[in-house]
Image (cartoon, rainbow, N blue to C red):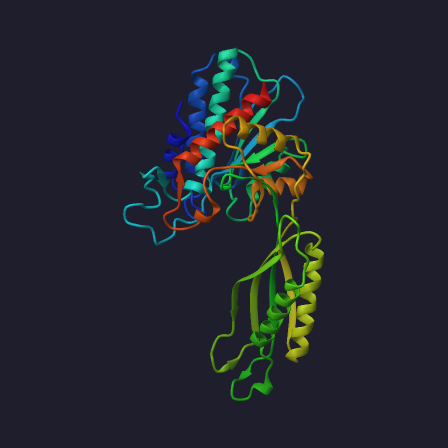
Length: 394
């Protein structure tokens, strides 16, 4: 079969942007690769391997390939999302987003590091496992699954559906292959989203006392939230909680007192600060804004609520993964992931402490023009993932 480097080039050439083309074509391409490999195996062994599809959204299916184990030990699960962010603009002429251009030991294209390079490594590890099953004419002791998810770059409905379908839960060892700069990343800041609205009273701008300025009130609320976040305690590993006001809209003419303003807020929370504490901060900000700009009223909706995930130093998966990196001559430091991943959702929803990230590339290159992943990174992660399956499944 193909190496991870060859697989990554194939996958980068398939548009799976979200929003955009979505995951239909790439999911079918992965399924066909697996079916082709199974067709080369003895039929009695191939029949043991299970391929499942789960329609999460119209035309958008999670895919799971499972090699069952002969014992009831916890399965090892590699989970990789198939979607990318939009193709975007600003790409160099010689490295188009779907060109899968290789130059100077780097693979360029949308999703090269986030996370088609990692998906290729996980696929290669699966194929190596199937080679071993065929060579030994036997199934492994511990079961293995590769889950390819949809919608990770949006609302993460793919992993939510996988949990609800029972594909993964509290007991499995779960690894995603997001770009981690050579680290094993085992902890995540929480992600809580608010949509805050300030209502005011419209009036002519020459007589502002007749109205109540919703934008001015929102400015007061934003400043209150920023000051409150500056006072929050930091976590010894995850660092400080942060807040970003990602989108704002309000008013409709420069000569009219605005009667409405809305802002989307992204909070990355670390213990001991949680969503309940964040809610109090927003409520206090609304009260402060209403006091500063009489006649206005603030309301909010929580549009996303993901808990923080802390490191479990006793995780057997962490110990096994560290041993695999050492065995491959690529010892890894343990760190935390600044974003939120499919494994973080599993950890938070299922209270699973054996969830972590390890993959090729750098998060600093993701979601940007001229995204790339180095070949050396893909080959390193391919070796480690294959070694992990060899050590822990048989």
